Image 1 (cartoon, chains in turn brown, blue):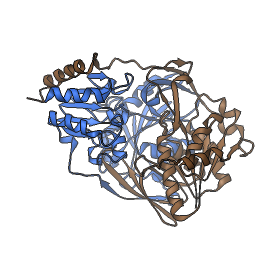
Image 2 (cartoon, one colour):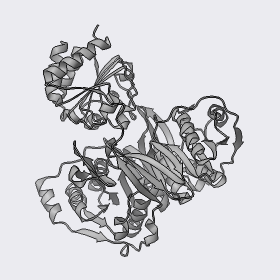
Image 3 (cartoon, helix red, strand yellow):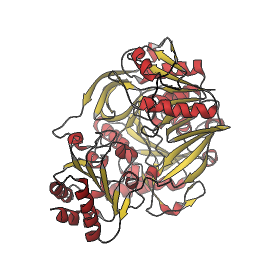
Image 4 (tube, chains in turn purple, brown):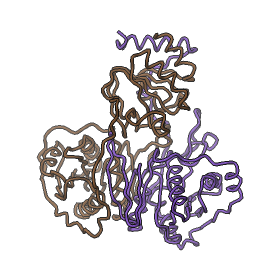
Length: 260
Length: 314
């Protein structure tokens, strides 16, 4: 069984930051393996450990995402592909339509049995790439999966809906499944795994190599501004040392009447 | 120039977000200078159509097909509706099920897709406002396309009211059964011993608590307040507290008299589930979105502040 896992590098913003044009200044961003993708990867690795096969990751990004790709290799991926091209570098938004076009080409080349994505990325939070990819491939899909049992033709999934409600769905294979956090416990990589991952080859693919037409990523959307939101709904912030701020909070608690 | 909003229902009830879609769609239709159409697929569509017939709605399209949501059937029905109505914008809710079909509809229409919109405008072209980096910044995106598929964030637009005089039409689903490759076999509710929705006072704990062992300082605070302990998602995912403690979109919506959020960053998925009379947040990140939702806050190390607060309340 071969499972393809798209891995995204997600950025988090420092407490204090500056905006540079249409993004946050790089100096205030730290990047990591996207949290949801860590669960998707773990799910794939556990299945392959149990049944045999291969977990292949694919990441769309410039060469500085290789550190994140190596994290995925250290956590059990067998092989990694990175796709980058000038066409992608020129886009102002790497949106799910574009990403799914690129991933479709990788699926065509790799011919996996299943694709596991994270439900969403932590930074852009589009939450749409998995379904967009499945639709392009004309595959079945299941989203926000928090439990999974596979048989030879069907994936039996539990989908996490809102309000403590879950939906039980049978999805025909092949399928794209979007994996929710909490489905498993992503492993920590051992030092040996990390060392091995540092030495692993990462296959670089360009549009030419994937037979991708430049038209495949002609985007009709463009980012036009990025700003800190108005903070009119902001809380009253108490300042001082813990004794002072705790006293202020205790007064708020007393005011609320719940301790009477 | 038309806006088409697709309603959402579950287990026999129209979900409230459907009425928010009417407001979002109505505002956008006004900006475009076009009509607002609404569609409802599956279930008791006639009853839903009555409930969706609000002020500003020009047409309600009903597609009778089965009882509950199935994404394969929705993709076909909504794509057909879009080909019939030819909307400038097709709007679905940014919910688990909205995101389960909208991206596929966009793909079939060869239309751009923007999810989780918090504002929409139209002035020569469609402009969509979204958040990035967990709400730390907002960004506007211009769309240059004949048709766009959008999902809009629940809880941002008001629920439409007033009764309307919309035309109600029916569309034959004409589902290609061979393209239905998923089957919803049932539902299950996550129950537990504790119903956080029933509590008057909640102390909620998030990722900032760092480890299961550290939960004791939160338990002590909860004891001092005679409060029930709740949690945001990471604490549940890590198995530090059971799933019945989860507050937010995936868990429970709560409306206590007092809500104390400890080490919770305040993602929209969490704060959308909190409607407290008094909302206190303790977090060491001054830009954490929890302070947008809270009434009172302390920006400091929770391990310093919480034990002192517990002492003062005891």
